[in-house]
Amino acid sequence: PDAVRRSIDLLVREVVPAASLVVLKTPPGSAHLVGVALDSAALDAVAGTISGDDTLFVATASDEAARALARLWGGWLGT
Image (tube, one colour):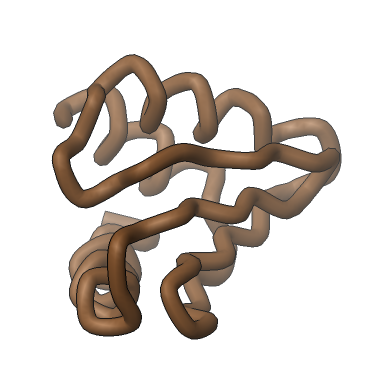
């Protein structure tokens, strides 16, 4: 989880819950780096990730789980 927190703090610019997904916006070319950190952490709340160039979709089991992760990760931005 330390690697997840570092990658979110350093690379994520915006965190948005969208139904059972959490959408993470990053600078161009950085989304996959955050995705690798999330996948490597094997978090119970994360079913999987799909990374584009500057956008990452994080799949969760429910809308509630997505909102909880978005609140947590949003609190890490710029810390």
